[in-house]
Image 1 (cartoon, rainbow, N blue to C red):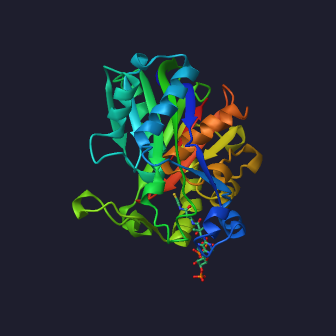
Image 2 (cartoon, rainbow, N blue to C red):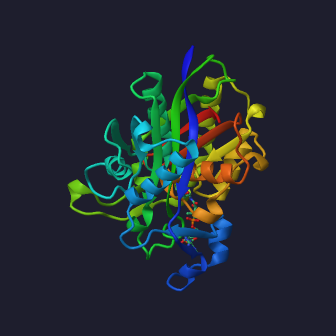
Image 3 (cartoon, rainbow, N blue to C red):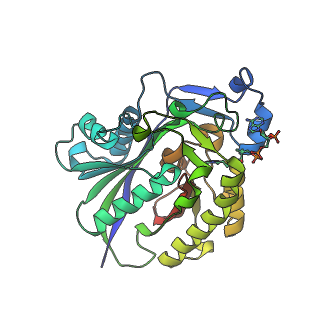
Length: 323
Ligand code: COA
């Protein structure tokens, strides 16, 4: 018997303000055509003044609780992936805990930038497998608009804000790939590549800083590392490529998504794509895509899903799950 972390509910929240590519033409030497053709992004949502990561995370969590038919007090733990928490401390996760009215359990943040949700899922699955928690709320939430250098056309056109949430519940499985729930995970990082994607500020350097990226270098690492981590996770789960129903990739760039799918030998018809509407929402992008994919009728119970992400660190990983 194997204790599996099974998806019970999913939900998301996007801030009201939608910014089309054309907005950037007013202030930068760029064009809608350039942004679309190089990244696949057409629009993104930006948080309103005063709208925080924990507020967006709470909205996504409420939607997931409603989808699962559960109350906040049914949850044992919150694992929240973010690199843009409201405050240096406490964690955004504890703020969500309070907002939801949860008076028991525990909550903490995970920081692995754009790979954050994959790291959070892996942690949540481990909490369930070790029976430290039975129901875990896993959230990805970001306000990357707060760390954009609006004069840097190579970065500020690529990112957006939002939040997505999943509820995982412990259930006994048979230990085979036919079980529902998380079947395998694979996590990696290599700190030698920190200069490729980072924020040039932080608490111990007395600043907030702005996101800096060598986009073409990140691109080169992305396809190769994403295909490789997905392959490792699939081997660990004991599943073949042709059994996969959906790839739900981190939504950074359509060319990375297409390149990775091609390297994995999966047709684009089996890939959930939301990058055109959300831009890169970092740790929020995978739960947003899962929630939108389900709402569109793409993702259904029993589907075999591979999700993969890479981001600053570099940190990257993949999760194989049966919905
Ligand atoms: N509008 C117009 N031109 C732009 C631009 C913009 N918004 N941003 C960059 N450019 C220019 C550059 O200045 C450069 O001009 P130059 O040749 O005169 O110096 C030219 O476009 C090519 O730049 P390059 O960075 O080589 O372009 P690219 O084809 O690699 O595309 C990215 C740029 C950022 C879209 C691409 O590298 C990318 O998506 N990388 C991955 C980034 C990512 O997803 N990161 C997050 C991972 S979690």
